Length: 198
Image (cartoon, rainbow, N blue to C red):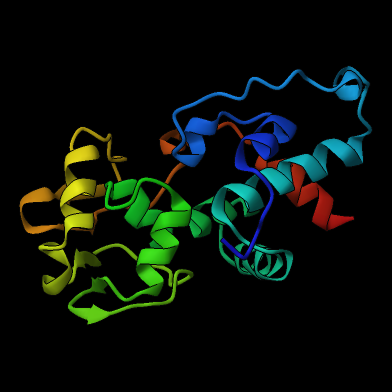
């Protein structure tokens, strides 16, 4: 995602997030670095929260800041709005519906044009879905070995309450708006707002 070549497990350990959030079911066996328990400055803590979100969703700084500006313009809390925008990316929705094992894989599958939104092909991973949108796997792609394997592997994956999955028809529908309770990781989004507000 965004051509990040850093090992995922190493980055997860650095940012203190579980590899399960990234769709990887193994833990790192690296020993924690000696300076990990050193008291961090307020800025370092805020920066860590921002880097955590950027890494999870595979977004670079320029695009992340653009999302922050969008969140700021919307009514409500800026931090929560930012999380809603990130969760509404089509690559994340594809991952949440279980049509990809990781967000990286979802980004690649979307980029290769395997998905439709309301019957129209979408191949931009950053496309933002909205309530009422129907995301489906292209008819031609459904019979591929790849998607059959993914469907079997992710058959029991838990879909957040703001999404509705129709595995039989290889589709899903956005039935609400993402909320913090449906996230599979912990984040203090207000720290990111504080960081950008300086």
